[in-house]
Amino acid sequence: MKVAIIGTGYVGLPTGVGLAELGNQVTCIDREPSKIEALKAGKITLFEEGLEDLFRKNVKEGRIHFTTSMKEGVETADLVIIAVGTPPHPITKEADMKYIHAAATELAEHLQGYTVVATKSTVPVGTGDDIEQLISKKNPKADFDVVSLPEFLREGFAVHDFFHPDRIVVGANTQRAKDVITELYKPFQGKTNMLFVKRRSSETIKYASNAFLAIKIHYINEMANFCEKAGADVYEVAKGMGADSRIGPRFLNPGPGYGGSCFPKDTNAMAFMGRANGVDLSLIEVAIKGNDARKKQMAKRVLNAVAGLKSPRIAVLGLAFKGGTDDCRESPAMEILNEILETPGVKVTVYDPKAMDNAKKILGDKVQYAAGAYEAAKGADVLVVLTEWDQFSKLDTAKLAELMHHKRIVDLRNTFRAEELAAAGFEYSGVGK
Image (cartoon, rainbow, N blue to C red; front, side, top):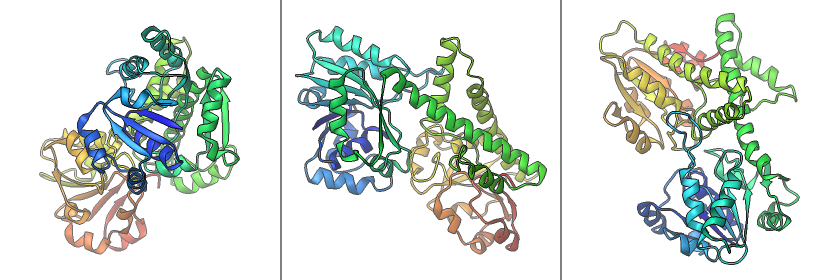
């Protein structure tokens, strides 16, 4: 099948590479010339575990191409996938649809023959109807259907999730469109659940799923707070809860709060849609407020660890919103750091295995950047873990003790074993214990 993908970000690029690996001819379209030039030159523009090898393989074998030309990508396509951003409006927090609408309007004039246009971006309910109207207005003779094809790729695990999906959700209102998507996902038949629903139901499923998971994360963080006061262990509590098949063990890991490109944006958009439709989505509203407050609470924990010190030095390990990705959008680490940096006299050195370049775009010269974890820890009064990279759990605690000015660790990801740190003379603060 010939597939055009509009957008080469954390959704578009892994999807394009995955579809190429399945044997499709894929053209990825992006308006940013520098990004397309880099991809054409064989340079991958984001980090995802296992993505670069697949990217290089499919470029070499000629199954994936890159262009800034909408005409070049769309006019021969059987399927056009819209995977552009839907950032939150700065005031209302609703999903900003300008990139979706611009893509739909531009692609319309290049449609040739019957084409399915799929939205893989997370979009408000009713967006499919809007896209239909925009295309029909621009090109009244176009023969097309619009479907909702929400993505459920976890950043850091996008390659795995593409080839091992929990489910494939398709919002299609015509049989003709269903047939095209069925053919696209033929390699997964018999291996995963393919759910065909109405288009508006599909658009709701993504928001409903992410909002539920965000609520689950906020809940276990509240339980972690309770465990700290009550003398319980949140991991033992989570294990007991997760053994209940009605609850399940996933997303019961306490930490500094949820973040990333999806959960903050999608919970806010879902809350806005609830208000717009006169529906009280109180659980989502409370989770949003609680998650915002948690990052301030975590920053206060860090500052309490250096209270009374003159010009304290803080070493921060982890800047991405989670391990396995270089994405710093809505990262709890970024928000916690910004809170910390508001305190006069504090000096901060940071390190992340993959996210340093993206972090520099946000933090600028407000912090010092280290080449490694040990370099960051040198002379520090407290070491803070904000992202759960596996390599941090393997650090030599004896070496850290030698390098640091004070033996203090605030571990907001519970990366270290408290017993080992205590034996090495560290003051240790984790989450939920």
